[in-house]
Length: 60
Image (cartoon, rainbow, N blue to C red; front, side, top):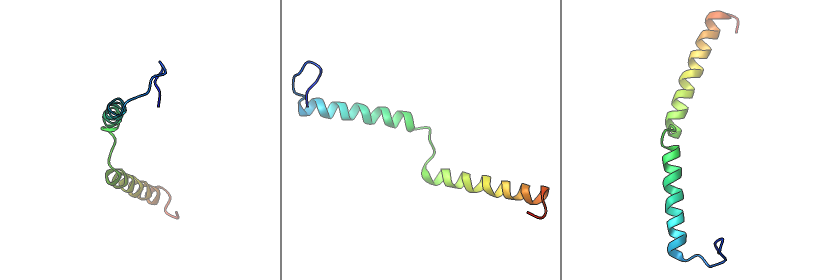
């Protein structure tokens, strides 16, 4: 691997880049729900929607 100056990246350089990217990704995704939380919320919303449809459109 080479950087913009044409010199070769060292293992420590590469490791530092990986660390920085991982930290940035972790920070950017920290407010997202877990997979389990997402599906629990989705199930709750779908149950509420189904109940509303039953109340509004009895034949549904």
